[in-house]
Image 1 (cartoon, helix red, strand yellow):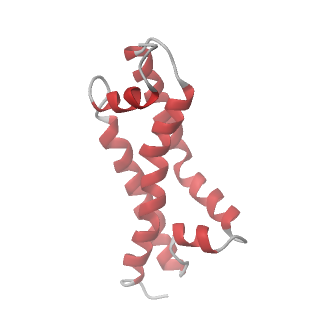
Image 2: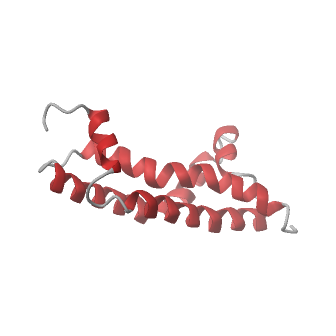
Length: 126
């Protein structure tokens, strides 16, 4: 196992134990993004990800707000990946666990929250 590359080890997670987390964690991130996106639309705030790119003054507040919404899911993703690693590799590779947690929790949340805001803004009166 020590000779496996970083990418091979990441791709290997699509099979084997705990594969259901690959569906459940992005689903939870999606639900959190929907909830936050609807709240953003009701408050008249611009889409999340776009605001982080175009509004450097408000970026810190947006990051804090987003982190507040997904931090538990992110840490759960790290814990579950560590369990997977112990079962499969008999060792924990922390960097890989963080990469997997980002892909399963942070990326879906960040991409979908703004999209939901745009959609919900069409149905919500300010």
